[in-house]
Amino acid sequence: MEDVDFADEPDEDGEMGDEEWETEDEGVEEGADPHDDSELTYSKHTASVFCVSLDPKENALAVTGGEDDKACVWRITDGETMFECIGHKDSVTCATFSHDSSMVATGDMSGLIKVWKVEDTKEIWSFEVADLEWLEWHPCAHVLLCGTADGNTWMWKIPSGECKTFQGPNCPATCGQFLPDGKTAVVGYEDGSVRLWDLKQGSTLHVLKGSDAHSGPLTCVSSNADGSLILTGSVDCDTKMVNTATGKVRIVI
Image 1 (cartoon, rainbow, N blue to C red):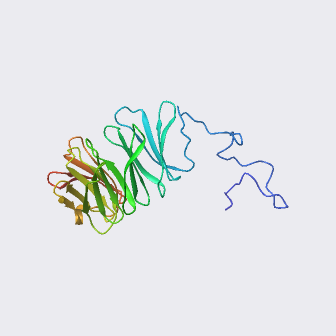
Image 2: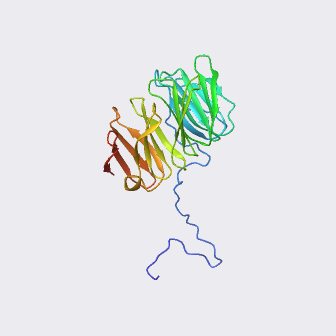
Image 3: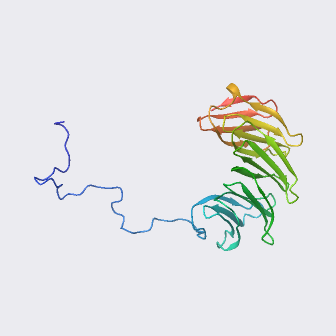
């Protein structure tokens, strides 16, 4: 330890010398606000915000959901609140616009899902499932798809509520989405498996399991523009590219 040279040696009474140690905060005034380059800040939530989505038709509205058990629909030009989506039982973790921006779907951690009509701000449909994992709109219809902690994938026509369920393995359906054709969905599960569902028939087209599956829970799935390929991501640090026609893994990254 003879080669180790500390900048400050303790005084005889055990106190450090007068020279102060440098810190990462040196030069920052105490109590000063951090630099903010944002053009607009929306601050109507009273707790953490967990989700955000822009309306796809005009890109004029945003919906945000938070720990304060509500979602807010607001204008991105000036931050004015258009309406609040209230009545949830738990933190709102999913909030998204329909393809034509006429409806907003909100979902909370307890599994309560609500749909609101943007034009008149009215709640038009609600349903309660097991703990909600994710929530997605159909690419060109008023149809909702969601995955739950009990392994089910649910699909509803809105606002009629006509429903189909797709039973996966006995573990949470952790992520999923419609493919661009609107007739197929890809769903990933906590056990590492992936299923391609025929939504009309209610049956699986392909199942990735065994060596083709991930070794950990799925975190995300996505497809290319024509739905011929999907990408899957997992906590196992792998990304897999899958041919949707054959169900075969093409590339592991």
